[in-house]
Amino acid sequence: MKHSLPTTMRLSCIVPALCALFCVPVHAAANAADYAQSVLAADPLAYWQLDALAGALSGADSSGNGYDAVPLGSGSLIAGLFGNAAAGGGSYLQAPTLDALTGSTAVTVEAWVRLDAPMSSIDGSYASIYDSRQDNYVLYFDRNNSELRFKVATANGYAERPGASSYIVDKKQGEWIHVVGMLDQNDPAGSSAKIYVDGVLRDRHTAVKLDSTIPGGQLAAIGADWNNGSPSSLFNIGNVDQVAIYGRALTEAEVRNHFELGSGKTFAASSPKVTSMAEGFEVIAHRGNSMFAPENTLESDRQAIALGAHRFETDVRLTKDGVAVISHDDNTSRATGVSKSIANSTAAELADLSAGLSNVFGDRYAGEKIPTLVQTLELARDGDSKVVLDVKVDNAGAAIAQAIADTGFDPADVVAFGWNNAAVADLVTHLGDAEVFHLGFFGGFVAAATLDGRASYLDGLKATGVDGLALSFGDLLSGGEPLWGDLLALAASRDLRVFAWTVNEAETMADLISLKAERMIDGRLVTGQLSGIITDDPATALALVSSVPEAQTWMMFLAGGVLLMLRRRSA
Image 1 (cartoon, rainbow, N blue to C red):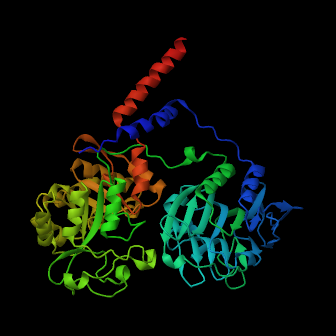
Image 2 (image 1 turned 60 degrees about the vertical axis):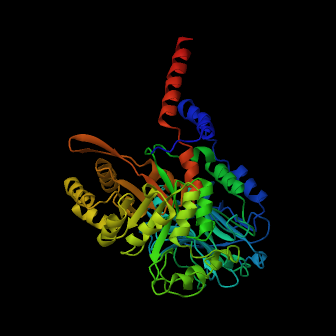
Image 3 (image 1 turned 90 degrees about the vertical axis):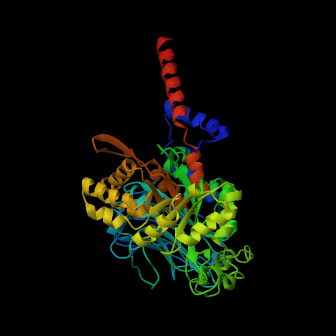
């Protein structure tokens, strides 16, 4: 069924649609003086513009606080964002101890970087942009995890590492990109480590253990790792410029302002956009609104429903006495702080455990319990929501069917995920009116290699009762268009829906929603697109989806645009 946009959302699309038709975005040229003024207005502890003095790289601190860095190494100067910058690999700077950070409860590290090669080309495991001694606040490229990361460690010894995927960063190869990492103890989700790229929040890690001070300021390096008192992990695949450190968390408005002034682009023109979308596209809240509430709890699901997510996804396991309960892990330690095996415990033994993820949220959600599937379906039923059941065991079909019957939940509003052929067969047997998706299909699909072979493989799945497919977005994109194009088009030709998980970056969301592939299949041209994405941050995904005018709205504006241009020509 098509999910129509509310009238107010449709109307809010009018101005962007008109601009898309008739307006050419104007990007003001980046201005060094305006950018520097905006950084200084944000009161940095240190600001290294990395310009040249007398033909040599300068480590002068423009903040006025006297934290001058010492240029070292043998690299040459290159054209930077403004003026000159350090060439990657040979040039680096030793930054002094930032004693002003001692006792601070927040930090922001800001820099501009340019990659001249893919992240996979890093010589070694890491390439450091700014690296404080003992890794207490660090911006770096992590080759092994394929992420541009910010690491922050607090005085209590706890650390988090939010990251932006290589998928995002490698697309910007050859461009100067704006990178900001911060510890923000006033984030709406709770104390969080965050990373922004080009003004967009890419990742947020929330943890109550981040409620601590920053360790005393340490020696650091720009363009290298300084942990052992000598440089390593040199930034050898690009360049660094305009590095600033703050003893507070910048606001999102400040981050975007710095991006706009440094790039000469407006954030609105550069922000992620959906260019096309499948009819009936669904935003699915992963374990509920799990970026802001403890995963797989009724509160997390309740928040997802309130946001307007089309479905929420939740994980199903069986207790020792055969009760379907909601938990991603078999062991309850991570969620509750108490170690119990769900498979070896009765529902009654689990009922009193707090599932409030105290390591992340403290005692804010201490009253949340491990819900049963019956409780979860009752919440979805009363909230007029649909669900995705990620079934973690192979024999839960009968218990799920009983829970659906006991709650009067409409089985047509259920998508059930099975991870292998046995789990899928069990779900198909017991959940005849629900959709059953296969999650373990991808290896066989890739191995089939040809379009015809892949078509036959999907036909085999379809014959077993499979209604859809789900996979990680990294796997989906791993082989480029030949792979994802075959999958989306063949799935469309077989009336199989495709979901991708777990997508938390706005730019990746927009790219995935917009994916479109065409293939000649069985003598006809077939267009395939994703049917939904699964995300920890449904609010961001819903905002992207709601910004897309419906097809008939686009046609109205297109027709209006043609008429307007004809009138202008005849005037």
